[in-house]
Length: 195
Image (cartoon, rainbow, N blue to C red; front, side, top):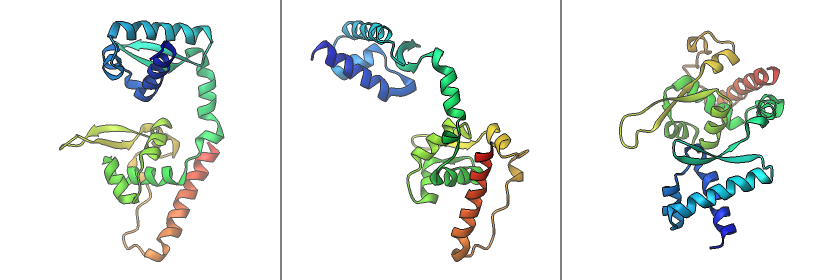
């Protein structure tokens, strides 16, 4: 493997590792190279990123390396997060948010069962918009994450507490269920767009 290939591989691995990052020992095990060589390659990557004035940097946090954005670009990230293009939620995210709001604390698998489809992307979107958070771990195998709404969720929708959520209908007429859901989600979308 050439140095460029090794750099590209490590860059990709750090990207995939996300916020957890990888230690030189982790990377050495994965690419089957000595940790000292890995450290040298990471250092050369750091210099390369700096020299090329790239938008990302490699930082060490608690012994693990990870890709991060540069602090000087933070004002642009805040603008992006606040822009109307990024403040609206997809239908899937709205469904997921409603399920979490009414059934919290709830696991991703329970959300998937209710929706009938995977909710990973919607959960990630809601977390990044600070509408939901990890509130605990469920007992049992794997200790799955339990999700709940945040104070920002309450502030955003003008609620004092979760008791102010509109009550769910007790006798559900299957033929009108889709119409009611559309109306419910349109109200959520309208609230998000006016913010």
